[in-house]
Length: 38
Image (cartoon, rainbow, N blue to C red; front, side):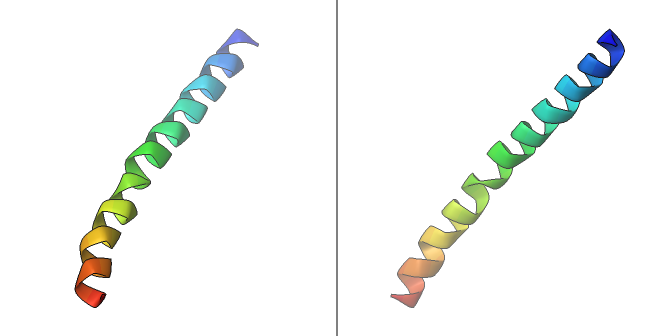
């Protein structure tokens, strides 16, 4: 039971980490693109 809990914690933290890394990328990429388009 505790092993499953650890695995879930690892899984969730990896998802959160991925989201945190992914979110700024389009935002940072979008700023120059929008300014070039505008």
